[in-house]
Length: 236
Image 1 (cartoon, one colour):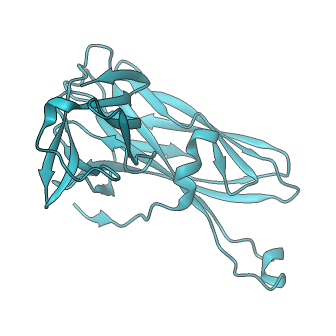
Image 2: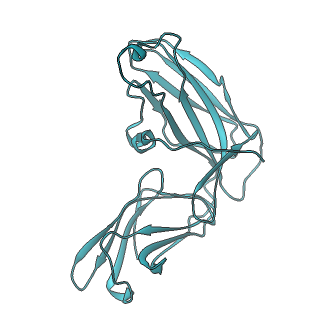
Image 3: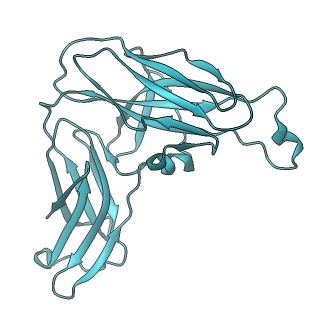
């Protein structure tokens, strides 16, 4: 299957605010389709005084052994229409349609890639600045409430450093946020940097995260992990 390299821009870090290109807003920013449904809707709002041309595409989303995202062409999900023009201060509802049917035993993951298209006469070309077209990537998951969430978190010596190992042993994705490691003997806290780009783990994936400032990890009995996973707090 042909692979497509889709670079994650800084805009992916703004998904929690639903922001895109400053003038565009997307809703919802986390898209889910139950496996007994066939479609859902993505609404794009143009909050600027200029018309915007937008392209929307769907890609299958997997992760390699290092947890790096891999996007590939797919016919399982289609976006209709795939190219739209939104009037100033207007909005447009885009349908995201699942082409397959039936119950899934493991969650299926996709990325909806939203690209700003160039205007014939872009005012930014005359401003003396570089004309940058912007992109954002939204997660799309197909599943059901019966799929299990199961994960292991532990601190290990990996590649010569103390790192947090996260193993997704469940049937659905994990999204990590607000992760810290605490040394119970000193009450010192060590942050673990996660965001909407690197915080996702798809099923069967294991990832390693740097623990800022932690240099000794031999005595794991003194180290406690606190993490928010899929919106719920866990302690290890």
